[in-house]
Image (cartoon, rainbow, N blue to C red; front, side, top):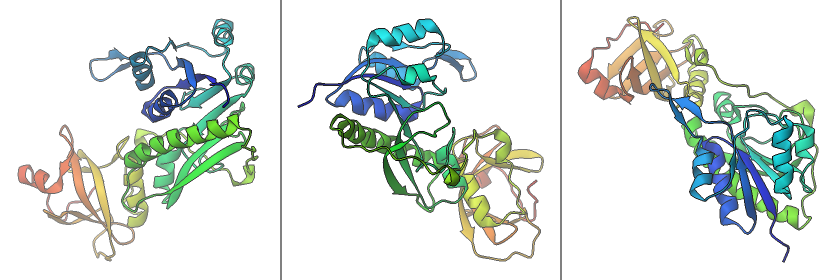
Length: 313
């Protein structure tokens, strides 16, 4: 049996937590955790630790939160930890070559897509937005590029026809931890052969913006269906009814040609809002009126009138 590896884990958000937990439950030794600095969150601007730090402190692990990973003091701290391998999961910054080359087994990353598709900050959301039926996680060797390193191991999954980005995020974060453990074990045994990515097949998954959520109802219902699911829970899709912002969730495509202009509410009842699109219609089952919580359309209609014939802008 090989000796346990000394692992330094670098990650920050919720997506990275199952991977860290999987390593903590495994046979190797996590000697330290590196994450982004605490940030102000919520309306009260309360300084809050990232999820990975919360888990690390629960297990008594040393936690580093450098403002920069390119400064000499941080590099010396990493050198003193003498890691055999660096595991990076949604850390949030591109790492310099000197850091990647420090461990004897290099640095590996858990990415939420089947590379080379969807390189970038939001691979899970873009897979849903673009109507993909399959995605997965990739364990890759890190280099100085944006998700351009050699592939070590991939695990595909199907995307459900009604699945949101948030639901897929949760599934892939767990799958990432499981696949990471398999990859680390095979690395120790020398059974993983790196495969270069075909860069000609690469696609980008840039950060999302709130502006992306403003729906263009002239688009086909199928396109809107994917966009609403891909932006759920953040930044969410929206439009304006009588001048007030309403966020839309839980869509269903209705194969129906409407004589009404795109964006017109054709029906409003306990089943939802039936809205004309550029092609077919979309039934919206959940809504969040401005200043209120997300709710079923039926509940919304009990407290506010949304009249058929209204145009969503």
